[in-house]
Image 1 (tube, helix red, strand yellow):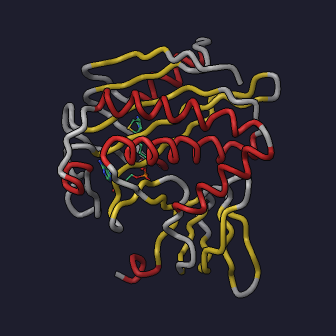
Image 2 (tube, rainbow, N blue to C red):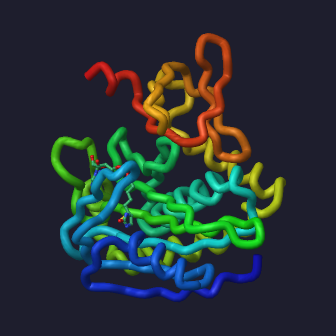
Length: 249
Ligand code: BT5
């Protein structure tokens, strides 16, 4: 993958950076197109949930990517964005978030950020996706959801645009790794090292409504979560993970 030329579109207000960028992608916007907003009127989480943030205190961004990977390998691309955000934060302020599979950024068991990846289409066999990231910088998230922000964790107020710039710089280093099997192994190893869920008993709710309970064993090189259910390892590609402690609460 050649060096990415980022085209950054910034908005004071928008419905959702993901919604905007998916629409631009369908009109032919290229790999490397980025949207960032100070405020979203209809910020989206996964599975039709909402993402809340007051004006100007969070990184609210979406990035259009067209890596040369298969559909099965797409989770690695999303994982790369989570890793890039985590590394960028460490460089900016020393904070080292872990990742709750699939891609929540966690500090002290609280949610610092979340990722919403949406497949746009498949062109010449390669998927194009919009990866959206909401990262709480100076506002600790809605009450009652167990969230936190960078300022509350380390006392540093990071401007959203500064966070975006360092995220993109880190992403430039990681993204090419998605396209080779050695690179994907490297990403999987880095992801494993920050995986908050490893060894924990979890309930995983699948997209089809079914669920499993087991112990998180690992992630594989394609980014699937490997859950040990009574001695049988199940590879989960998409779903919602609840630590059992949360389930029982
Ligand atoms: C996510 O969803 O964690 C993905 C969030 C992606 C948001 C970005 S912002 C830029 C881009 N444009 C968009 O429209 N979206 C992306 P999920 O795992 O479904 O988590 C959503 C849940 O997190 C909600 O139901 C709340 O409980 C909680 N939540 C909402 N706002 C939050 C916040 N600021 N911090 C922490 N948790 C929050």
